[in-house]
Image (cartoon, rainbow, N blue to C red):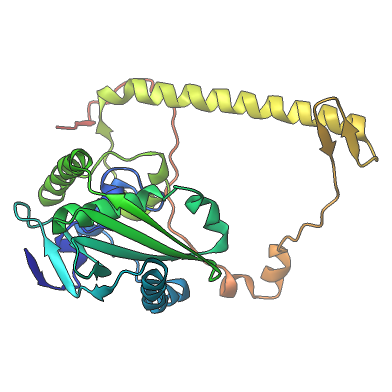
Length: 306
């Protein structure tokens, strides 16, 4: 099924979303995507981002370069495709390969990411995106072409995999149910800072959640081990520095250790305050600090969490 393009991405899971849905995105967690889809937070507006703008403008160049390199002909596909059974599963396609059941996804990236495209390598987010496009459009082969650092061009082929798409569909159906019911996915380690954005304030209620006892205990143990490790690291570092003294460093049969002077720039906040500039140029961010103390008793005023 196809339809005219729409701009409200809250209404569906698209190709650029599926990696986050499956917990396989480096840039967005399932919880962050859920918060965008449910309107808890606004999706970042990247329209003024220069890299995004250049990527859009270079898409036509990448497509034409692909044509020259492969001898294939491509055409634009200004439609949104919709899964026959799940209306929230949709995709857009950069180009269709004329006269075939194949498609093309165009990418650009910086030279720093060249290794991600070495040999047969393709970033997993893009593999999932192209696989999503293939299965929703009913096509068998997807090509992905990338311009790296404005100087190197690569193109690779991805074949439709029904078993992988089955797993993707199951993950998408489960995720979309959470969107519709307003039930957030479980947070992971990459959500620590984001949770402050999602829940910036607190009320006066303290909930009784007995099942978290073991998790809190484990957290305290991890912090204790971390503190002990940091102290041990500092001790060993001090011992090595004491041996180096005022030389450049030391050498062993396996290692070279250098202790080099470096200039460090720090802002003199007291001077800024004295000059009346600190408040003008300081930026305030909302934060929430989590502190754990040992409970002496369970107050009767605590409310149980249903």
